[in-house]
Image 1 (cartoon, rainbow, N blue to C red):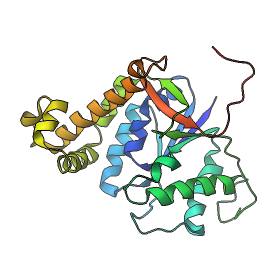
Image 2 (tube, rainbow, N blue to C red):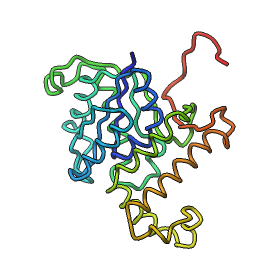
Image 3 (tube, one colour):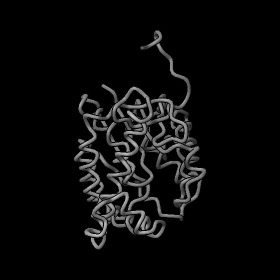
Image 4 (cartoon, rainbow, N blue to C red):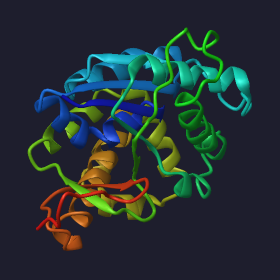
Length: 248
């Protein structure tokens, strides 16, 4: 059995990796999720979305948006989590992508994760981190990477990923507002054919847009990208792959 930790900066990331996470759940693996930045009113929605994917363990680490530092107290939160959960695999955001992302805290979070993973495997702040023994994170996968080096076939779990999006009403409404600020209505009608009928329902519009995004990404990383997958979810594995032999 493999133990997987989804370390999400925002709750939506759990669903963005939902195809692979649901596959692990289906295989009988243990899947945990932790979210750094999440408003209290959004947390029931994040839990509901995770439950649709089969994830029953979701923690909220209470990082304050734009108000934390890359310092010991915040590293302790991540190190304690890693040592307590003891994952075989961690999935988190791509540090390379984070450098170009203008969402709050993204660049700092990328440094926090990698430094904390290194500290989790060493004899550092044992008592402050709950007394758990060190745990070395051996396998890290970066989600939605700039330069993926592997693709997961998610055809059998894609419907659940789309269903989980519907639980994130607050995020969907926020996305609708942000997207409409960037794109003209005549262009959004090309993406969402019933745009005019649903545009007043902010969560419905955001959901329709996100479902289109997910379908486009799955096809780009699958059939349209010649990866060998039909519907793909792309990742970048940190470090080289060690194989017993060459695989087909």
